[in-house]
Amino acid sequence: MKLLEERIIKDGKVFPGNVLKVDRFLNHQVDVKLLNEIGKEFYRLFGDKEVNKIFTIEASGIGIACIVAQYFDVPVVFAKKTLGKNISADVYSTPITSFTHGRTYDVIVSQEFLNPEDKILIIDDFLAQGCALQGLINLIKSAGAEIVGAGIVIEKAFQQGGELIRSQGIRVESLARVKSMSDDGTITFCD
Image 1 (cartoon, rainbow, N blue to C red):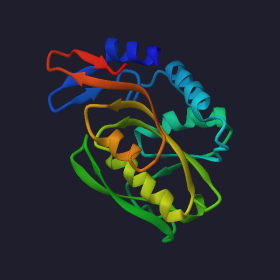
Image 2: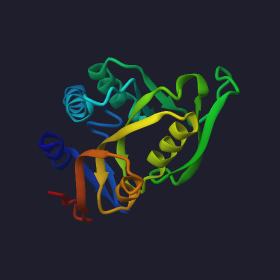
Image 3: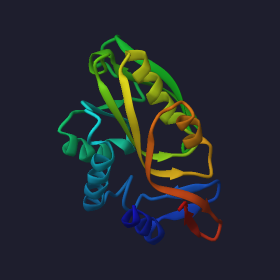
Image 4: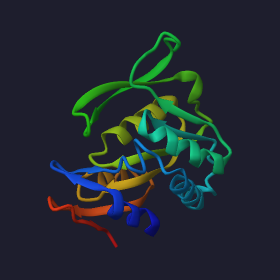
């Protein structure tokens, strides 16, 4: 998606350790017009798949998922990183290691929100090592639901996450695939 790539070049910042900071427009301060275009594109890519739920993980994926869900006219379900008092004990749970935060979370989703008859589209902001996406896949499989695919805003194609998930037969559509990032801030994209 050319518009997204241009925005990454303009406002993205590369930090040591292969960190791409896009908080000026995607995951801290949010450009809603850009998210709207992202939502349209994911609908173009997956609109024929009879999606009945959008699934993501808190926190950065929620805003993106909500915009995408408007195009599909379906609800958003998100996995939580903590078990609050307002969640029943009937949950699906899986550990996820965060590349960005360098820690492992036990993420959960209430069993009432994932069902065997669901056709689920996963939406997330980043795909790098694939840990978060694999965790969401595990939760969906625990529920016996169908995964129609994963819509990723930015994939770090030089890391193994995309290859790992695609090798499982899951369709992954990434709107911007970063081929490389250098310490001088240069970002190149896959063709």
